[in-house]
Image (spheres, rainbow, N blue to C red):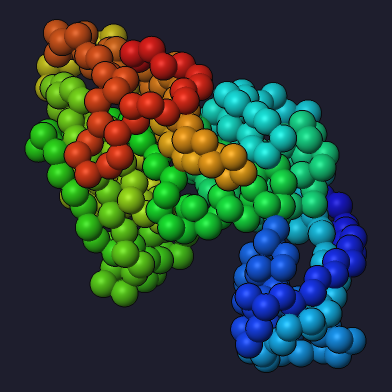
Length: 349
């Protein structure tokens, strides 16, 4: 970890006719679109915004010809150092980066994980990311969940990605191996919040935030089910909490899953494979979004991680089934992927 660094940039703008009578915070969002409205409001309260040389409040009105000056601050917000950690890059351009995160890699530094994270790796790959919040990371995967994540590489791209995720415009598709048999498809609409007594866990709670998970069965094994899961919201541990609440926890989940489940009459070979798997069997396989700068629709995909694939193959052999994962099958209610630019592994798993 390093000391937190700050760099100040002076930006100027002039209020045009289209902004006359608008609140200052709305005018700032229009004049300086690379920054979020909440960030601009905070800077205004800190005295970093002046109108005609005078400090104003976010709710104050502006008029035609007002001269607005912003003292913007870029900073390494988590005081994170670059580290040479390999990245599996699926796609990159000057505005975004899409990576396939392996199991065991924490996304950003936190208590107990001061370094060795994806954020450290991103800063080594692109030192300019130090100017963005959390090196451009806009969403997370749990430490032991594998798969796709998108990262913003510029102020504008980062801001628009955050807004797109908040507006549920970024589609995320997972593969989850769960315990027990499941209906062919369904939707879990249950709010999720912090567990009332175990603060490191989440739980279905009537006072939690709205949380919606769609699922459909890809393959049924003896005692386990392989699911395609689509997130409509993105709460912490959402898939794991929802599945555990239905008493079909994700296989291998050390927090929500309980004891190891072995199919009746399982061979010693299958038992060894299942016992050796020490993480949740959850993989972020597909990511669909509009490019934050060009607006071009894009879809990314990556193969299921080898250790999870080994478990699925063993269960398939035990059940005498040939499992497959149709690449273009889509769950009803979500936009069709057809016509989107594709990157990464688009073959069947």
